[in-house]
Amino acid sequence: MIVTQLSLTDFRNYENLDVELQRGANLFVGSNGQGKTNLVESLGYLSTLGSHRVSTDHAMIRQGQDSAIVRARLVHGEREILAEVQLNRTGANRAQINRSAIKTRELPRYFSSVLFAPEDLALVRGEPSGRRRFMDELLILRSPRMSAVIADYERVLRQRNTLLKSARNARGDLSTLDIWDERLVAFGSEIITARSSLLDELSPEVTEAYSTIAGADHSARLSSYLSIFASTPDDEKMDATATRSGTLDSFMVAEGFRASLGRLRRSEVDRGITLAGPHRDDVVFELNGMPARGYASHGESWSFALSLKLASAAVLRRESSSGDPVLILDDVFAELDESRRVRLADAVGDFEQVLITAAVFDDVPTQLVGTVVRIRSGQVIENDE
Image (cartoon, rainbow, N blue to C red; front, side, top):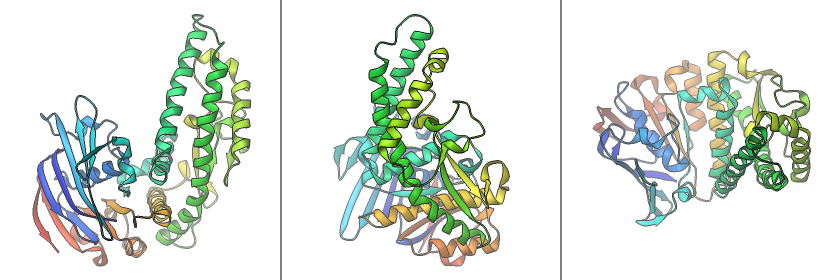
């Protein structure tokens, strides 16, 4: 799939924008702060319903405006789709496909993209919540129905935590907790199993991508840290019994989840929160046999995060019936030395469409200089094919 046209209205610093894009490499060039990243952020939002930079949609609406519109014309083979989302300061966001209204959460099934940006360094160095969000966004891109499963789990988790807090404050009893436990186990086990299956597919792709970017003498691997198998709810050392690799059996996960809830019941009541489940899990990144978090250098962490995104794109393109995901590289090449720039260019050169942002034109390898779009102060000032 490729994006042939992108239109923005009151999105970030763009009052109105219309830009045509081509198959292959498209390069957005401009000084820092001119709006390059805003362009690719809009496409990232269209496929994931989230921004890689901010946690609220309101930040993407131009100052003084009530709404913003992102509209993209998508083409795969003979099929053409017009996808649109409207972000609103008040009221729910709205979405359309070919001018017909759809539920906003259905947008990701029509457009798939993988975006890498400097913020993704936090996948390696940051908190577990970022890694969980990365896995869940990829799950939803692969299977949009997982969006509802994750939403149901979060709803049950909130209700269960409310019940635990009321019991802690001696204002309620736990007579209905078993019912919420079963719902939590049902939705949570599906998420844990789906994540483990995804990680099983990602791991060899990450190993290959990291070797391609950094050289064959480096080895990267992934494994799951599952709180339902941890010996204590606050085990910062991540004991070996809670670290798993490979696809997990759904029955084993459900039984393990139930057992952990029973084991932790007293601690949960004392603290008023649910202490085990996919909301407390993590992904362990290892580089040359050592945890990447805390051991990897800046350059190694950067390459690992980039490898995660390339692996994601490889998994999505293998399963997609609508062609490759659009691969977006936001300000990537400035952080890479010459050899890694060339290796990365070789690794992404066969994708149907690659969108690249750069402050310095010469940072981008010549094989990725196709259509050039120059950006200044929220406007396209030149578009060269």
